[in-house]
Length: 178
Image (cartoon, rainbow, N blue to C red):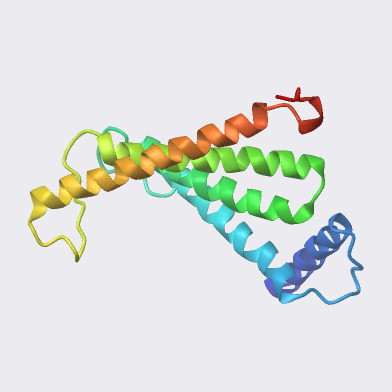
């Protein structure tokens, strides 16, 4: 049995499990939207897994000691892709547990992006931030870029705070009338 046959068997097994999970007849052809819901988020998750493995130097060992934060930033980027892809796939499944896990993964994505923006805004060292719209030189470009990332970090922190507030808030039926 060659690789194409194994790939067909794997796709058919995945399709059967997917159809069972979303209560769809497995003989019914999958729509483009269903295929896209399966393929693209899982591709993002696979990219995240590869980035995480690179972060721990599985693929390309470091030629020298890594700079401060390089490994951490690589792992955060990988976690954002991995959790984003898996969370997007879980949202299509429906159900209470899938929704709960997808919400947790969305929180990881929000925290990861906020961490990355915060590092770009307030991290140590010089950052090579450039844009075709910055015509005033590299010093202004770095200050402007750091300011833009600071705004992104602030918005990300507000988003994460709202997500946590929504999670920790009791359901509407349990709240007292104000």
